[in-house]
Image (tube, rainbow over all chains, first blue to last red; front, side, top):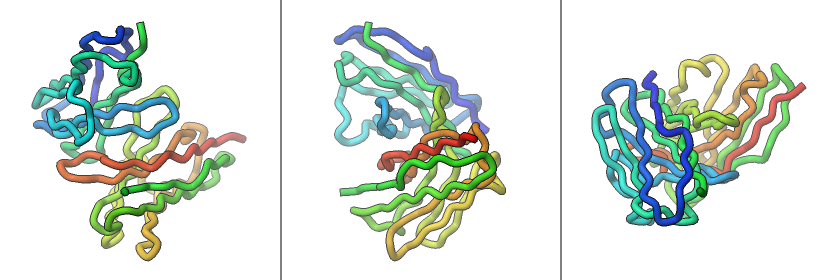
Length: 107
Length: 118
């Protein structure tokens, strides 16, 4: 199975901050990497698919980059509604696997 | 609009089975695979498997082989996931999610909390 490792596991940031979350795959996954946001009591919601494609309706402050094994999710200017947990997920092979998550908290 | 509506919370004893339903609407049920993902407290989400509603083909993660059964009832646009031999480490929120291309999950059910406790 492909292991997905996110860092950091949590971070504190202020509204307006630029936030970067990284995700590393244990083997090559091309650009088959998705990012999800999850708020308490809710299902995950896709933000970015295929490493850098913004899902329709997702604000432009979210962006993704990377290929191969190393990927990044960036929030250019953190908004109050962005405080949540973020997960990466590989779709290169089965079983699909997720990272352990990065919790973004208010500083 | 696309909706995936799951059955309600369950409390089960160790060794029992649970069957979770996922009723879909707003799109062609047989046009997209449905995946099952569970999320235990303090862990990342865990993919369990998929079902192709068109022909009933399934594929499961190795750790669930022999314990999980995924089925569908096409006339009522509903998929099911049954997990047997429950243990305390099966306590989690179980989700169904629609798979689209490029491969990602675009719509999710609201989740079903399964609690395994003696």
